[in-house]
Length: 296
View (cartoon, rainbow, N blue to C red):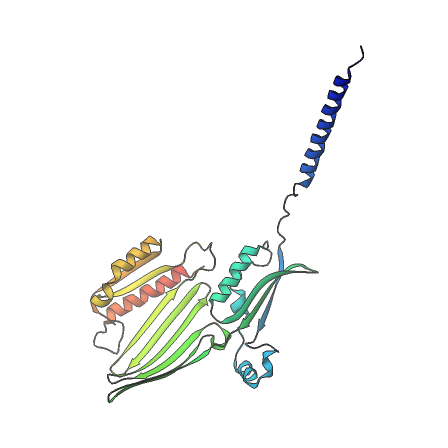
């Protein structure tokens, strides 16, 4: 029996439809992107450190003088902030975080972190341009026959080592004050040190603070802290409860010591408040704290 025209047309339509679906499926499969290749490992790190003013700006004598006086940031200061070591896979998000860390140091005008191909493989290219880091402080105020004045200097990048050092002298009707302070955020590995000494016409004060900064969003712990307080120091001790609450809320490890019968500045041997036994114990606890937390 010969097939009818309608039957032949139906078969033709089915064949054409099946062919179209097969072709579309083939095109869809071929258009899918191939699986992403693993990120290449960093074969080396190239650090380029530049002075405050580049060659285009260096035509002016002030720029040349500034470059001559300024000490360019040391390479190790830049290198210790890198989050992608040699041999690790290169990741653009982590490179961006490295650039943010470097900018937050406050000693660079420009920072860039990128990658480049070389004969030896992928190289991480880090470029920094220093900012001018010396600041002069001068103040003067007169009220009636009373005069208050001050002068000082601050260097934010001492010897190119990312150490902030400051000296300030202030004279007012009540007292004269000479203050020296230094901040080394990365003095040793992840240990930072902040110190301040004030010589007043009627006494002396000093302050020392140790800290451990975040280096990345994955840093597991920002710090382990120890506090040594005088027993009879209402002004300072009044803030301890709120301080403890904040430490607990941020899951920071800490330990607080108070020394019975002592007053503010009990470790300052130039005042009548000095307590030799309490000062010795506080110093021992501080040294033990450093040994325990900096041994790695």
